[in-house]
Structure formats: structure tokens, C-alpha cells
Length: 409
Image (cartoon, rainbow, N blue to C red; front, top):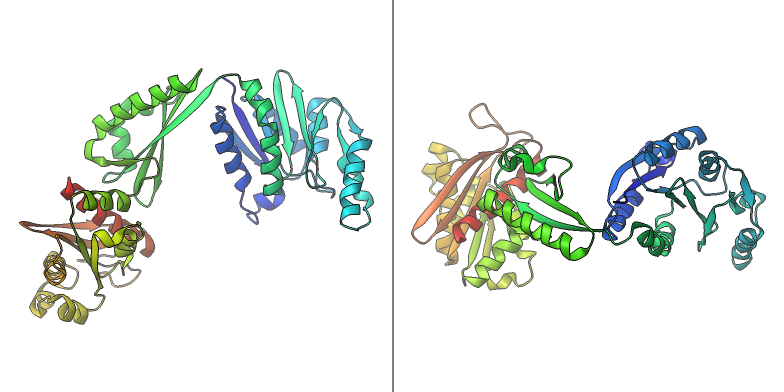
């Protein structure tokens, strides 16, 4: 199977002055045409350093895509590095230079002498036309394809798409299919233990794992000689993972917890109200962000102060005085008060300490109580979330949604 490596060039990227979006774009586009990316390098504007990374990339990939360093200034050294790696000289192309000059004529500007360097490409290589002044480079070397593209994202994206047919031909009929499973309710290491050798490297399908705001995404990557076979491999593995993980799987592809919960509420013709303290309306926002929220969402309270909990939700003063605002008892009273006042089928209440101050030894920052109240029962749970304020709030809102998801069945 043909594989690719990406090399991004530029001191400004190494210094953190520019975020490398080019590598992300290329990785996605290459995967979409059935070519997996096995490595990615970032290197500064030095010829020998670039050559070194080209050697590293060529040791593990059949296709090497480079971005950046094709401009006219002294720090644009990709073409020189390409020539040195290929063992050839740079060669001037009059037709390329005429195209560059036409761009300056169109802009009604004189052409600086420095732009002449952009008409040089390694001997034996092909140039890739560009709407800007920096042509790309395509070279074949020792059974590999090397491509150099400019660093300007919109130019790079347009030029890459122009070489896709050649890359497809080079890669043959190989295909990659990717399925995604979304999980919540266990940590990354716990899920890895449950999956065992399914996450070993070198498998096909390969299982990759990413984490964001407590949500675990399992990427099932299947490689095969055609898309039908790869898709079947993906779906078979997805079924196996669902059987192993059970209720930890809440959805697939781009589904969100809020989207899954809203669909369940609509299908079961149930309504929801919310009472939030530390999350400050974040839970309500997640629910209302889903189109058609008026079908299930009726009321939401942000009762940040003790007075608001008492006056708006009917929480008894004695409960707050005896147990504190952040307690199982108050979370339960908030949820019950909200459901009674709103007349909904479900109500969710969240109270906690998001920090960075306000915590004690008995009630540390990150302590959160969540309650789901419904006809015939009341589920209240205590959690302690780590990290900073925003993560605690997001994690609490996601956990509340997950509690409701499990209750809805």
C-alpha cells in the first residue's frame, strides 16, 4: 500500500507564529483518496535540515508532500533543498518566468529581480502551475513521488487538488475507509483496557483514539484494495466495538451527546427543563443548539446564587444551611423544583465548584453534583472533575446529558 509523509517548512511555524493548517488539510485529503499519512515533519528554513527531513520521509513513505519555502526571498529554500536531495542542478524555465511576469503586469507592478528564482526547478522535475508567483514542483525519484507546494493555504489547496489524479493513479485502487464511534462515561485508558489487543498497532482495521472534553472518539481505519471491502471491514469492526463497550458508545461519526439526547426526547415525546449553577447555562445551550429544540426544551434557570435557588426553584433555606449549595440534597431539590415549576417529563440540575477559588478540603474545586429528576425517580450523582474552570463546566454539562441519555434508554 502506498503511504505518504508531510513536510512543513518555515521558521515561523517552528516559532509558533503561524499554526500549521496545511498538514491537517493534506492529511485529510490524502486519506480521502486512499493514501494513509504515516509521518509528518516540521523543519526550519535551512537546506541541509530540509534535505534531512526529506530523507527521513522517503525512508517510510512513497509520497512526500512538502509545503512552504517556494517564495522569492532568501529564506525560501525548498527548491534548492529538492535539487540537493535529488542530486541534480536547478534549471531555469523561461515559460515559468513569463507566467510570473504576466502576473506582475496584470497587477501593473514592475517585477523584482528576486522573483526570477521562482522560475528555477530541479532538472528533470515538472512544475505545477499556480495562480500566484510560486510554481509547485513534482518529481519522481527511486519509485517515489515528491511534491512541493507553496505555504499559502488557499494556493496550496488549489494546487494539491490539481495533482490528485496523478496521485490516485500512482496509488492504484487502494482505499481507506474511516468509521468513528463516539463514547462517554469512561476514560481513555479504561476503554483501551476493554478493547485489549484491538488497539495494537499494525492491525487492519486500525483503531485510533482521540479525546476532547471527555468525549472519546474511536477511529476505525480500514485499508483494502477497494472501497466496498474496506467499508465492510469498518462496519464489522464497529459492530464488535459496540458489543464490547455497550452503553459507553453514544453515537457515531459527527453525532454529539446533545444531538443524541434531543433525538431520544423527540422520539419519545418527552420534555426537559434545566436548573444550572456552576455551568451557567452551558447545558441549556447545548440542548438549544440542536435545531427543533422547541419540541422538547421548555424552561431553563441559571440559579447561581443561593437566593436564586430559593426564590426561583423553591429550594429550602435549611437544606443550603445544613448541607451547602454544592450538595446532593440541594441538587435534588433544584431538579425537583425545576420539573415541578416547568411541568416537564425530565429536569436536570447541576451545582458545583468550578474554581479556580471556592474549594475547601471537604469540597474541592471540581466537585459537582448532578441530578436527573423524572416521574417515579430521581438520579443524583457526585463527580470530581479535574483541570481548569472551563473544562469542569463542559465536563459537567456533558455528564448531565449522558445521565439523561442512559435514563431515556
